[in-house]
Image (tube, rainbow, N blue to C red; front, side, top):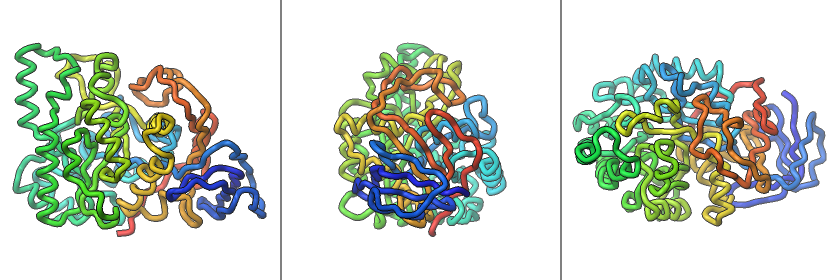
Length: 446
């Protein structure tokens, strides 16, 4: 493997921004020294003047739709979009077809990723009401965690048996990631609006159907179970201000047994955007009010929320064009997550250091990922070079998602991803995918 020197760049890492020369060799960060002081040689030299170098993002929640749902996306197409957006590692969810609820099905996904994924990868094992023994058979050093749908979403993976949930929380020792919404409450809300509007309920009521109460009731139930059994619980895609009372910021991340995640769409949109964006911003849990968005942003800064992810979940535009009850929830985000967060930096919402902390450092620490998530000598050279002052507009012709649409279409972003490196390989450069290498399976120090 050739060596690469990124000279005279601003490195955002571990709460600081420093001017540095960064040498990559054999897939790792070899040398990191003050700007202008690197004395060795490299096969390729990249001038990082006026650019910022960030650790590659680690997205702990994506749905890349393979196997079985590949009309929407697949491991090849969506990993291409991910690296174009500066995401160098991802953790993919189990609600595919068939769902990844056995070791055999899980390993088939790993095998496929090794063949086609441009980014590094791990896959959650899915839970059912009856697969506890499969969950207990996974190697925590090789699998990121298990996923419970405590509220139904895309796919039929709802776990609602109280005994099954009790046993999972009591016996599973690896990280348990949960989607929290109470199904009966949502169904009752849906029926109320169906009675008034029929099948074509206006999208503006989505956040009232998938309500704050349904989210909080489920999240608090999960927290109570985890507290009872001292489980390692991670609650995904927090969407309400009310849920924030369930989390702590008075202890270091490494001591937390219960952690939480915010997603880019809940940090960017509000329920007012349903009027213009419609089904393109229909997610579960729903995008809610300005008050909720404001509280979630503050919780990221105050460390009540530990990581930021995408919940990238593409559907075809034909599916998204259906009436309310037929239209699936979810949308594509990996290509634009970083630039959206950098836009929030320009708006004064987050610092660069906080963005890196929540998208790289904390994800690596929380999941105990081996040798990734930081720009450190000896760590895997996963990083992204960005220009904070290079405006561009999202258009259909520059989308890489297989589904061919984005909730950010026509949005102008001030920042641009210039180059993305995965394990020392340049995989995206100046608007083009470099399809000459494959990502690696993530491993965990557990």
